[in-house]
Image 1: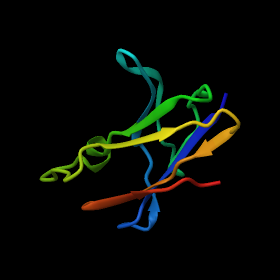
Image 2 (image 1 turned 180 degrees about the vertical axis):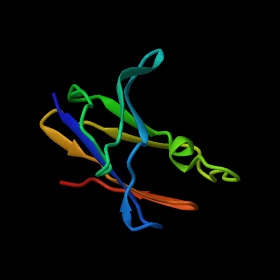
Image 3 (image 1 turned 60 degrees about the horizontal axis):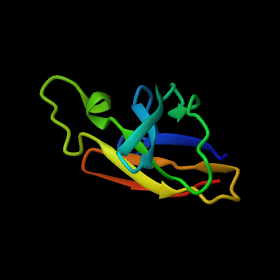
Length: 110
């Protein structure tokens, strides 16, 4: 089993993105099976995600529309889906999201 963590940073504001809803799911023969959901804390971290079995294909789904919600705001990217393979021999994956109103970037962190 591999622990999964993420950290969302709002690069347009230069600070962590707190309050971003995050879902963790794994791919099955029937589609995506939700394993857990939480929201990022004030430091932009999602701490309550469950472990994922090695050999799985996992998806982190970030609800960026909720984060960007506000009067007169319509987000260009209402959600960000990050799909990755969990290797059988890995104990942890950290997948940060760098977010701004018109773009985003992800990478495998440490």
